[in-house]
Length: 417
Ligand SMILES: Cc1cc2nc3c(=O)[nH]c(=O)nc-3n(C[C@H](O)[C@H](O)[C@H](O)COP(=O)(O)OP(=O)(O)OC[C@H]3O[C@@H](n4cnc5c(N)ncnc54)[C@H](O)[C@@H]3O)c2cc1C
Image 1 (cartoon, rainbow, N blue to C red):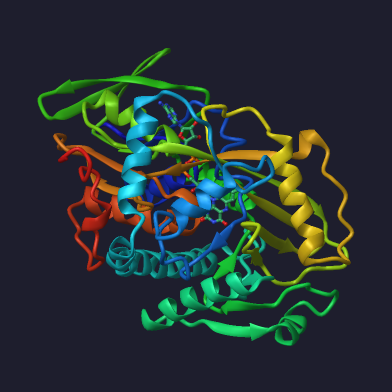
Image 2 (cartoon, rainbow, N blue to C red; image 1 turned 180 degrees about the horizontal axis):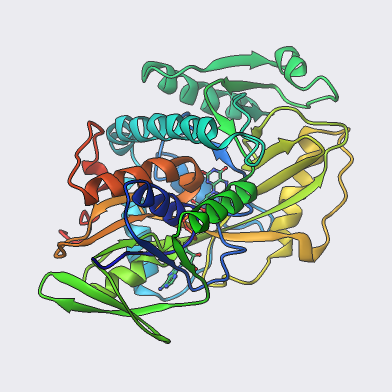
């Protein structure tokens, strides 16, 4: 029997390998990068069943346009004459409406709650010392009246969907953050969210997979495939080919290029974000999103990670320091007593979020192929949804169909149009 090849050793690819290996399969993970740094290592590590509204939603277009004119703003599209980008923007525009949000909610809620449970199972099996999962909720902080209105509407939507959400006053927030002033009007608390250390999770997954005999091949790019009818026989790399029985494509923001190799359309753009760690003084306790600034704050005892910005751009390696400045300035705006020093340039992390234009991931069989599946396009929720995606792909491979509603995640939803 030939192995299953997973293209992409980000968190989605590793969880896919994890569940495939658990069901006794031979697995090879191939990544064009070094498998030390990628989008899955320096993100905010939030597990967010509360995030039931996709990125493509009402208001995003007008907010996005106003943000385009500030160099420190949290959102930017690098204007360029690129058919793929124009196509993606048109699709994003078409999906930014209330109907799409309502249709997406049950799907996002279902997969998010499933994934959270899989994380709790993972911790029960592997212990919590390494990944530092803190199951203590997420706080959405707002400073303005408009922010209050937006977040209250999201809290109501969450409650109507059966999720827990509490609207907190500034005084309530003071109890969650007892060590310093939080300069806000109020916040919404989602008690069922959690956060973990993404880098430590990544390391643990790699070590565990290697111990279980999964081969991790870094610095190897898949450039093509060899086929026999509707089946992939091998993947082609610069160093030769790797025979495979099945192919799982978890190639993050590059998954559209792999789909092109396989002969179908999968709109995808990279949404670059930045993060940096600072000493946690005075200690922040509660994972939070500074909503007007679109900045995440994830505390890990002595350290805290701040992250943000969504730049739809081709420049994977460039750090736009003005946008990092925007993230940095938001710290004092929300936590005036926090001792923040601007991070050294080489300590600023960057990652490309894999963004589909409707804000929903692609999970399932690839159109036209009998032995290929995709798990990609999780945008701001790749860590959150990785265990569920990996489990669903492993189940799909052995023909096990669960109860989760999956059709909104169909890989061929744009290939059909
Ligand atoms: C600032 C920031 C904060 C974030 N915070 C959160 C958060 O709190 N919670 C959350 O859930 N998500 C968060 N995210 C999003 C999350 O990081 C991503 O959704 C997730 O890492 C995507 O994982 P992935 O495995 O799909 O892709 P990646 O991690 O990008 O992995 C894909 C891999 O595929 C490889 N690859 C691509 N093409 C090929 C090829 N042809 N051959 C071989 N290898 C290939 C790439 O080298 C890459 O390593 C955040 C992102 C950013 C930028």
